[in-house]
Length: 336
Ligand SMILES: Nc1nc2c(c(=O)[nH]1)N[C@H]1C(S)=C(S)[C@@H](COP(=O)(O)O)O[C@H]1N2
Ligand SMILES: [Mo]
View 1 (spheres, helix red, strand yellow):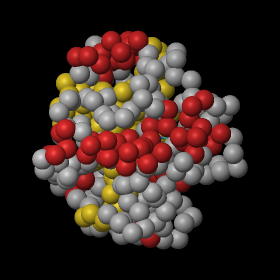
View 2 (view 1 turned 60 degrees about the vertical axis):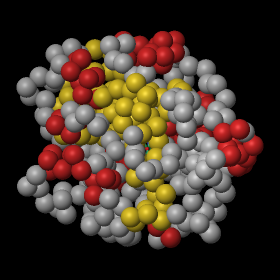
View 3 (view 1 turned 45 degrees about the vertical axis):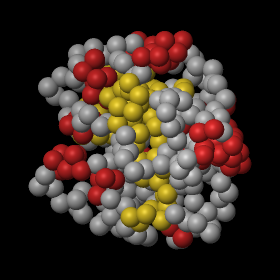
View 4 (view 1 turned 180 degrees about the vertical axis):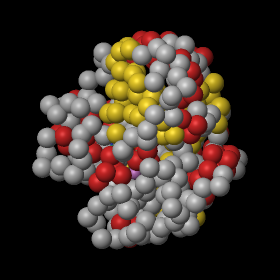
Protein backbone atom coordinates (compact mmCIF):
# COMPACT_ATOMS: atom_id res chain seq x y z
CA UNK A 1 0.00 0.00 0.00
CA UNK A 2 1.17 3.41 -0.78
CA UNK A 3 1.35 6.05 1.82
CA UNK A 4 4.11 8.27 0.55
CA UNK A 5 4.35 7.81 -3.21
CA UNK A 6 2.73 10.87 -4.81
CA UNK A 7 0.98 9.35 -7.79
CA UNK A 8 0.85 5.59 -7.51
CA UNK A 9 -1.30 4.84 -10.50
CA UNK A 10 1.35 6.45 -12.65
CA UNK A 11 4.29 4.74 -11.01
CA UNK A 12 4.84 2.09 -13.63
CA UNK A 13 7.72 -0.10 -12.69
CA UNK A 14 9.79 -1.55 -15.46
CA UNK A 15 8.33 -4.99 -15.46
CA UNK A 16 9.51 -7.58 -17.89
CA UNK A 17 7.46 -10.60 -18.78
CA UNK A 18 9.24 -13.41 -16.97
CA UNK A 19 11.52 -15.47 -19.09
CA UNK A 20 9.88 -18.69 -18.01
CA UNK A 21 6.66 -17.46 -19.58
CA UNK A 22 8.34 -16.81 -22.90
CA UNK A 23 10.03 -20.18 -22.74
CA UNK A 24 6.86 -22.07 -21.90
CA UNK A 25 5.01 -20.26 -24.67
CA UNK A 26 7.67 -21.24 -27.15
CA UNK A 27 7.62 -24.81 -25.99
CA UNK A 28 3.89 -25.00 -26.49
CA UNK A 29 4.16 -23.53 -29.94
CA UNK A 30 6.66 -26.22 -30.88
CA UNK A 31 4.41 -28.96 -29.63
CA UNK A 32 1.90 -30.77 -31.78
CA UNK A 33 -0.97 -28.98 -30.09
CA UNK A 34 0.28 -25.68 -31.27
CA UNK A 35 -0.51 -25.93 -34.93
CA UNK A 36 -4.15 -25.01 -35.13
CA UNK A 37 -5.40 -21.72 -33.80
CA UNK A 38 -3.60 -21.78 -30.50
CA UNK A 39 -1.76 -18.53 -30.95
CA UNK A 40 -4.12 -16.59 -28.73
CA UNK A 41 -3.84 -18.91 -25.78
CA UNK A 42 -1.00 -18.22 -23.37
CA UNK A 43 0.84 -21.35 -22.32
CA UNK A 44 0.33 -20.71 -18.63
CA UNK A 45 -3.41 -21.21 -18.92
CA UNK A 46 -4.08 -24.84 -18.17
CA UNK A 47 -5.73 -25.76 -21.40
CA UNK A 48 -6.91 -29.29 -20.87
CA UNK A 49 -5.76 -30.74 -17.57
CA UNK A 50 -7.49 -29.03 -14.67
CA UNK A 51 -5.06 -28.20 -11.92
CA UNK A 52 -2.00 -28.51 -14.07
CA UNK A 53 0.01 -25.38 -14.66
CA UNK A 54 2.82 -25.31 -17.17
CA UNK A 55 6.42 -25.33 -16.06
CA UNK A 56 5.95 -25.20 -12.32
CA UNK A 57 8.44 -27.08 -10.25
CA UNK A 58 6.83 -29.35 -7.70
CA UNK A 59 6.60 -27.78 -4.25
CA UNK A 60 6.95 -29.68 -1.01
CA UNK A 61 3.65 -29.53 0.81
CA UNK A 62 2.51 -30.69 4.24
CA UNK A 63 0.60 -33.98 4.45
CA UNK A 64 -2.71 -32.26 5.26
CA UNK A 65 -2.45 -30.52 1.90
CA UNK A 66 -1.29 -33.49 -0.17
CA UNK A 67 -4.11 -35.65 1.17
CA UNK A 68 -6.78 -33.23 0.03
CA UNK A 69 -5.39 -32.26 -3.34
CA UNK A 70 -6.51 -35.28 -5.41
CA UNK A 71 -10.18 -34.70 -4.64
CA UNK A 72 -10.09 -30.99 -5.46
CA UNK A 73 -13.04 -29.61 -7.42
CA UNK A 74 -11.08 -27.82 -10.12
CA UNK A 75 -12.39 -24.55 -11.54
CA UNK A 76 -15.34 -24.44 -9.15
CA UNK A 77 -15.36 -20.71 -9.90
CA UNK A 78 -13.94 -19.41 -13.15
CA UNK A 79 -13.16 -15.94 -14.40
CA UNK A 80 -14.82 -15.96 -17.81
CA UNK A 81 -12.82 -14.27 -20.53
CA UNK A 82 -9.82 -13.67 -18.30
CA UNK A 83 -6.29 -14.99 -18.63
CA UNK A 84 -4.70 -16.33 -15.51
CA UNK A 85 -1.76 -14.21 -14.37
CA UNK A 86 1.58 -15.99 -14.77
CA UNK A 87 2.69 -17.76 -11.58
CA UNK A 88 5.90 -15.77 -11.66
CA UNK A 89 4.07 -12.45 -11.38
CA UNK A 90 1.65 -13.68 -8.74
CA UNK A 91 4.58 -14.83 -6.59
CA UNK A 92 7.09 -12.03 -7.23
CA UNK A 93 4.94 -8.91 -7.18
CA UNK A 94 3.48 -8.97 -3.71
CA UNK A 95 2.32 -6.88 -0.81
CA UNK A 96 3.24 -8.48 2.49
CA UNK A 97 4.69 -5.73 4.63
CA UNK A 98 5.84 -8.15 7.31
CA UNK A 99 8.57 -9.07 4.82
CA UNK A 100 9.31 -5.55 3.60
CA UNK A 101 7.56 -2.86 1.59
CA UNK A 102 9.11 -3.56 -1.82
CA UNK A 103 7.12 -5.68 -4.25
CA UNK A 104 10.00 -8.17 -4.43
CA UNK A 105 10.68 -8.30 -0.68
CA UNK A 106 8.11 -10.97 0.19
CA UNK A 107 9.49 -13.40 -2.40
CA UNK A 108 13.04 -12.70 -1.22
CA UNK A 109 12.29 -13.05 2.50
CA UNK A 110 9.31 -15.33 2.99
CA UNK A 111 11.34 -18.50 2.59
CA UNK A 112 12.17 -18.18 6.28
CA UNK A 113 8.52 -18.32 7.29
CA UNK A 114 7.93 -21.43 9.40
CA UNK A 115 4.56 -22.94 8.54
CA UNK A 116 4.88 -26.31 10.25
CA UNK A 117 3.50 -26.64 12.84
CA UNK A 118 0.84 -23.96 12.47
CA UNK A 119 -2.01 -23.22 14.82
CA UNK A 120 -4.93 -20.83 14.59
CA UNK A 121 -6.51 -19.43 17.75
CA UNK A 122 -10.27 -19.25 17.44
CA UNK A 123 -11.92 -17.16 20.14
CA UNK A 124 -14.62 -14.69 21.05
CA UNK A 125 -18.33 -15.25 20.44
CA UNK A 126 -18.01 -18.83 19.35
CA UNK A 127 -19.28 -22.21 20.49
CA UNK A 128 -16.05 -24.07 19.80
CA UNK A 129 -13.15 -21.83 20.76
CA UNK A 130 -9.65 -23.19 20.92
CA UNK A 131 -6.21 -23.38 19.48
CA UNK A 132 -6.64 -25.42 16.31
CA UNK A 133 -3.86 -27.17 14.48
CA UNK A 134 -4.20 -26.23 10.83
CA UNK A 135 -4.76 -29.87 9.90
CA UNK A 136 -7.87 -29.92 12.08
CA UNK A 137 -9.23 -26.72 10.60
CA UNK A 138 -8.75 -27.99 7.07
CA UNK A 139 -9.73 -31.64 7.48
CA UNK A 140 -13.54 -31.31 7.29
CA UNK A 141 -13.48 -29.35 4.00
CA UNK A 142 -13.03 -30.46 0.40
CA UNK A 143 -10.70 -28.29 -1.67
CA UNK A 144 -12.08 -26.13 -4.44
CA UNK A 145 -10.24 -24.13 -7.03
CA UNK A 146 -11.53 -20.57 -7.43
CA UNK A 147 -10.19 -18.38 -10.16
CA UNK A 148 -10.64 -14.85 -8.84
CA UNK A 149 -9.65 -11.38 -9.90
CA UNK A 150 -7.52 -9.67 -7.24
CA UNK A 151 -7.75 -5.87 -7.31
CA UNK A 152 -5.22 -3.99 -5.18
CA UNK A 153 -6.16 -0.54 -3.92
CA UNK A 154 -2.97 0.65 -5.65
CA UNK A 155 -4.78 0.15 -8.98
CA UNK A 156 -3.10 -3.00 -10.25
CA UNK A 157 -4.75 -6.40 -10.55
CA UNK A 158 -4.18 -10.07 -11.25
CA UNK A 159 -6.23 -13.21 -11.91
CA UNK A 160 -5.26 -15.99 -9.53
CA UNK A 161 -6.41 -19.63 -9.24
CA UNK A 162 -6.73 -20.19 -5.48
CA UNK A 163 -7.18 -23.51 -3.69
CA UNK A 164 -9.09 -23.80 -0.45
CA UNK A 165 -12.62 -23.67 0.90
CA UNK A 166 -15.31 -21.16 1.84
CA UNK A 167 -14.75 -19.08 4.92
CA UNK A 168 -18.42 -19.82 5.71
CA UNK A 169 -17.57 -23.53 6.11
CA UNK A 170 -14.79 -22.76 8.54
CA UNK A 171 -17.02 -20.43 10.54
CA UNK A 172 -19.84 -22.98 10.76
CA UNK A 173 -17.29 -25.49 12.03
CA UNK A 174 -16.52 -23.28 15.05
CA UNK A 175 -20.16 -22.24 15.66
CA UNK A 176 -20.51 -18.46 15.97
CA UNK A 177 -22.90 -17.47 18.75
CA UNK A 178 -25.80 -15.06 18.30
CA UNK A 179 -23.68 -12.22 19.70
CA UNK A 180 -21.14 -12.52 16.88
CA UNK A 181 -21.50 -9.71 14.32
CA UNK A 182 -17.97 -9.36 12.91
CA UNK A 183 -14.97 -11.55 12.22
CA UNK A 184 -11.53 -10.29 13.12
CA UNK A 185 -8.36 -11.82 11.66
CA UNK A 186 -4.76 -11.50 12.76
CA UNK A 187 -1.48 -12.31 11.01
CA UNK A 188 1.52 -13.97 12.63
CA UNK A 189 3.97 -11.83 14.58
CA UNK A 190 7.50 -13.18 14.31
CA UNK A 191 10.02 -10.37 14.20
CA UNK A 192 12.88 -12.82 13.88
CA UNK A 193 11.64 -14.19 10.57
CA UNK A 194 9.67 -11.18 9.39
CA UNK A 195 12.14 -8.39 8.77
CA UNK A 196 9.40 -5.84 8.11
CA UNK A 197 8.30 -6.18 11.70
CA UNK A 198 11.64 -5.07 13.10
CA UNK A 199 12.54 -2.40 10.58
CA UNK A 200 12.12 1.32 11.12
CA UNK A 201 8.97 1.13 9.04
CA UNK A 202 6.68 1.24 12.01
CA UNK A 203 3.63 2.80 10.44
CA UNK A 204 2.04 -0.54 11.12
CA UNK A 205 1.21 -1.56 14.62
CA UNK A 206 1.73 -5.35 14.34
CA UNK A 207 -0.03 -7.70 14.06
CA UNK A 208 -1.73 -6.91 10.76
CA UNK A 209 -5.46 -6.99 11.49
CA UNK A 210 -8.42 -7.28 9.15
CA UNK A 211 -12.13 -7.80 9.56
CA UNK A 212 -15.44 -8.49 7.88
CA UNK A 213 -19.03 -8.10 8.86
CA UNK A 214 -20.36 -11.59 9.67
CA UNK A 215 -22.75 -11.61 6.69
CA UNK A 216 -19.88 -10.67 4.37
CA UNK A 217 -17.79 -13.42 5.89
CA UNK A 218 -20.60 -15.93 5.33
CA UNK A 219 -20.99 -15.00 1.65
CA UNK A 220 -20.04 -18.02 -0.46
CA UNK A 221 -17.41 -16.04 -2.38
CA UNK A 222 -15.37 -15.28 0.76
CA UNK A 223 -12.58 -17.84 0.67
CA UNK A 224 -9.85 -19.34 2.81
CA UNK A 225 -6.89 -20.17 0.58
CA UNK A 226 -4.26 -22.79 1.36
CA UNK A 227 -2.92 -23.08 -2.16
CA UNK A 228 -2.70 -21.50 -5.60
CA UNK A 229 -1.88 -22.72 -9.13
CA UNK A 230 -2.61 -26.29 -8.07
CA UNK A 231 0.01 -26.27 -5.33
CA UNK A 232 0.56 -25.27 -1.74
CA UNK A 233 0.51 -21.54 -0.98
CA UNK A 234 3.97 -19.95 -1.17
CA UNK A 235 5.10 -17.99 1.88
CA UNK A 236 4.94 -14.66 0.09
CA UNK A 237 1.27 -15.24 -0.75
CA UNK A 238 0.32 -15.86 2.87
CA UNK A 239 1.07 -19.50 3.70
CA UNK A 240 -0.33 -21.56 5.15
CA UNK A 241 -3.77 -19.93 5.41
CA UNK A 242 -5.00 -16.60 4.06
CA UNK A 243 -8.25 -14.89 3.36
CA UNK A 244 -9.38 -14.02 -0.18
CA UNK A 245 -12.29 -11.58 -0.55
CA UNK A 246 -12.46 -10.98 -4.29
CA UNK A 247 -14.93 -8.09 -4.28
CA UNK A 248 -12.80 -6.00 -1.92
CA UNK A 249 -9.44 -4.31 -2.31
CA UNK A 250 -6.55 -6.69 -1.81
CA UNK A 251 -5.57 -5.39 1.61
CA UNK A 252 -8.65 -7.05 3.11
CA UNK A 253 -7.24 -10.45 2.07
CA UNK A 254 -5.07 -10.95 5.13
CA UNK A 255 -2.20 -13.44 4.97
CA UNK A 256 -0.68 -16.05 7.28
CA UNK A 257 -3.58 -16.03 9.72
CA UNK A 258 -2.97 -17.13 13.32
CA UNK A 259 -6.11 -15.84 14.99
CA UNK A 260 -9.79 -15.67 14.06
CA UNK A 261 -12.11 -13.95 16.53
CA UNK A 262 -15.87 -13.65 16.38
CA UNK A 263 -16.71 -10.29 17.90
CA UNK A 264 -19.65 -8.00 18.58
CA UNK A 265 -18.02 -4.73 17.48
CA UNK A 266 -16.32 -3.81 14.22
CA UNK A 267 -12.59 -4.41 14.65
CA UNK A 268 -10.18 -1.58 13.89
CA UNK A 269 -8.22 -2.74 10.89
CA UNK A 270 -4.57 -2.02 10.18
CA UNK A 271 -5.08 0.34 7.25
CA UNK A 272 -8.01 2.15 8.82
CA UNK A 273 -5.79 2.87 11.78
CA UNK A 274 -2.99 4.25 9.59
CA UNK A 275 -5.07 6.37 7.22
CA UNK A 276 -8.81 6.27 7.95
CA UNK A 277 -9.60 8.84 5.26
CA UNK A 278 -7.92 6.68 2.61
CA UNK A 279 -8.72 3.11 3.60
CA UNK A 280 -12.12 2.23 5.01
CA UNK A 281 -13.41 -0.85 6.79
CA UNK A 282 -15.52 -1.94 3.81
CA UNK A 283 -12.98 -1.37 1.05
CA UNK A 284 -15.31 -2.67 -1.64
CA UNK A 285 -13.84 -2.28 -5.11
CA UNK A 286 -15.65 0.74 -6.51
CA UNK A 287 -14.65 2.62 -9.66
CA UNK A 288 -16.87 5.54 -8.62
CA UNK A 289 -15.13 6.24 -5.34
CA UNK A 290 -11.59 7.42 -5.94
CA UNK A 291 -8.78 7.12 -3.49
CA UNK A 292 -8.04 10.66 -2.23
CA UNK A 293 -4.79 10.59 -4.20
CA UNK A 294 -5.61 8.62 -7.33
CA UNK A 295 -8.46 7.38 -9.52
CA UNK A 296 -9.96 3.94 -9.02
CA UNK A 297 -11.70 3.95 -12.41
CA UNK A 298 -9.10 1.75 -14.11
CA UNK A 299 -6.45 -0.75 -13.16
CA UNK A 300 -3.17 -2.08 -14.50
CA UNK A 301 -3.64 -5.80 -15.17
CA UNK A 302 -0.45 -7.75 -14.63
CA UNK A 303 1.70 -8.63 -16.45
CA UNK A 304 2.08 -5.07 -17.57
CA UNK A 305 5.04 -3.02 -18.63
CA UNK A 306 6.02 0.42 -19.75
CA UNK A 307 5.18 -0.28 -23.38
CA UNK A 308 2.12 -2.43 -22.80
CA UNK A 309 0.58 -1.12 -19.60
CA UNK A 310 -2.52 -3.28 -20.05
CA UNK A 311 -5.03 -0.91 -18.49
CA UNK A 312 -8.56 -2.24 -18.00
CA UNK A 313 -11.70 -0.70 -16.52
CA UNK A 314 -12.32 -1.40 -12.86
CA UNK A 315 -15.70 -2.96 -12.19
CA UNK A 316 -18.09 -2.38 -9.30
CA UNK A 317 -17.40 -5.03 -6.65
CA UNK A 318 -14.55 -6.15 -8.93
CA UNK A 319 -17.20 -7.72 -11.18
CA UNK A 320 -18.77 -9.83 -8.39
CA UNK A 321 -22.25 -8.29 -8.63
CA UNK A 322 -23.81 -11.03 -6.53
CA UNK A 323 -22.52 -9.36 -3.37
CA UNK A 324 -24.48 -6.14 -4.01
CA UNK A 325 -27.34 -7.25 -1.78
CA UNK A 326 -24.99 -7.19 1.22
CA UNK A 327 -24.86 -3.41 0.84
CA UNK A 328 -28.46 -2.64 -0.09
CA UNK A 329 -29.41 0.80 1.18
CA UNK A 330 -25.85 1.73 2.17
CA UNK A 331 -24.15 4.84 0.86
CA UNK A 332 -20.96 3.33 -0.51
CA UNK A 333 -19.33 6.74 -0.86
CA UNK A 334 -19.61 7.13 2.87
CA UNK A 335 -18.83 3.52 3.73
CA UNK A 336 -15.81 3.17 1.47
N1 LIG B 1 -0.55 -9.83 6.71
C1 LIG B 1 -0.65 -9.14 5.56
N2 LIG B 1 -1.62 -9.46 4.69
C2 LIG B 1 -1.74 -8.77 3.51
C3 LIG B 1 -0.86 -7.70 3.21
C4 LIG B 1 0.18 -7.40 4.16
O1 LIG B 1 1.00 -6.48 3.98
N3 LIG B 1 0.25 -8.15 5.31
N4 LIG B 1 -1.02 -6.99 2.04
C5 LIG B 1 -2.36 -7.01 1.43
C6 LIG B 1 -2.42 -6.41 0.11
S1 LIG B 1 -2.28 -4.71 0.05
C7 LIG B 1 -2.66 -7.13 -1.03
S2 LIG B 1 -2.90 -6.37 -2.52
C8 LIG B 1 -2.69 -8.62 -1.00
C9 LIG B 1 -1.71 -9.18 -2.01
O2 LIG B 1 -1.80 -10.57 -2.08
P1 LIG B 1 -0.79 -11.39 -3.01
O3 LIG B 1 0.59 -10.88 -2.72
O4 LIG B 1 -0.97 -12.81 -2.66
O5 LIG B 1 -1.18 -11.09 -4.43
O6 LIG B 1 -2.37 -9.13 0.29
C10 LIG B 1 -2.94 -8.43 1.37
N5 LIG B 1 -2.71 -9.14 2.62
MO1 LIG C 1 -3.12 -4.12 -1.99
